Image (cartoon, rainbow, N blue to C red; front, side, top):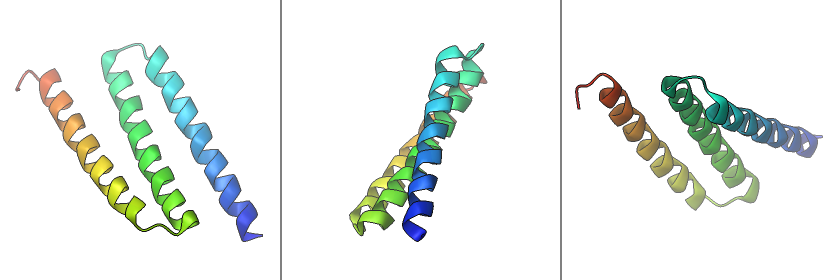
Length: 86
């Protein structure tokens, strides 16, 4: 039963990643595309953590942490750029 729930959660996360990717491609403005990209990185980090727990490899948690930090810094830089304060 637990395996079915884990598989369903993984499928839902991948579907959300696909929908965010479509929004990033079709976004009417640059800000919408940035929000979609940020959503994609958050979902990707959660998928990496999910795979880490599922496969029993703790090293993937470090990868997820580094990816989340780089994504956060990137979003801050882009937000500052749009404010013209860079």
